[in-house]
Image (cartoon, rainbow, N blue to C red):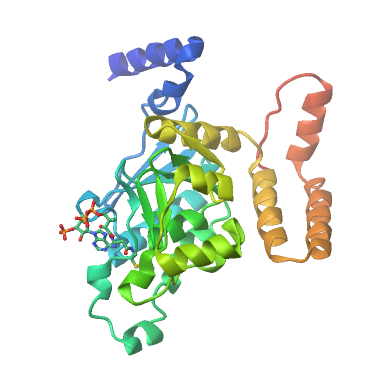
Length: 296
Ligand SMILES: C=CC(=O)SCCNC(=O)CCNC(=O)[C@H](O)C(C)(C)COP(=O)(O)OP(=O)(O)OC[C@H]1O[C@@H](n2cnc3c(N)ncnc32)[C@H](O)[C@@H]1OP(=O)(O)O
């Protein structure tokens, strides 16, 4: 075991000293991955050089990661676990090369009655990601359809592989999006494009999604996860108080009027002056050294 650790350290050292290898660094950087636990439908690990990125991979390949009840419940548990983990500063959520997720599980929904979904408030339990206070990056390869597209939109940042496809095909099933697919899509791509997508079930490519504003970056599919992890490592290196405030300010501003949003942002900015990390960040700048944030 000692020998393995030493080799891992030397290997890491080599990768970090070699500038052309940066794209490999994020995945090979830590041998201290968390075990995947007792999950059936997802893989849960910690990644990054400092083990500070929460990594969740949807893992129901035969059903193209269709979002069944069990999968969504496990996703909720994993997000809550990372929420409570003081080392984790950012979460990456991904699927497989073929599918991020092909939507809510149609076979599971097929026999449900109106009374079941109404009285059980079906899909209300899906909002774990939206409630997470830590930034979440969706790394989308392949299909992100229906609930899959909605789950990606619940994340704070979407990175897409160049073959990704986004769509809301619920109309073909005689229903409509039920987890934010109309409103979030409308806010992301504008009313006309959203209307076209939900009424025709037409999918948009990663490139179109980037142009329309749904995703922040398109990268070659094979590099997607590493790219997302690198960004997550960067976010995790900052003060968790400040990243939490940023997330809250952007999300609140998105819902509020400009005047309310500006006021809310200013008050959070003022509040950041109560943190040790704000003092440390500014002191470090003045002393020309890297800051040492303590998340306090
Ligand atoms: C919130 C509401 C919703 O999300 S409603 C669901 C919205 N999503 C959809 O309507 C997409 C449904 N899936 C498809 O249209 C296609 O599967 C595809 C275009 C994503 C891929 O087509 P392809 O021909 O490449 O694969 P298969 O259709 O053969 O699929 C493989 C395997 O996965 C099962 N599957 C796919 N999507 C779902 C789903 N949403 N729910 C349950 N199962 C799904 C599909 O049935 C196949 O399994 P098999 O055992 O072979 O039947």
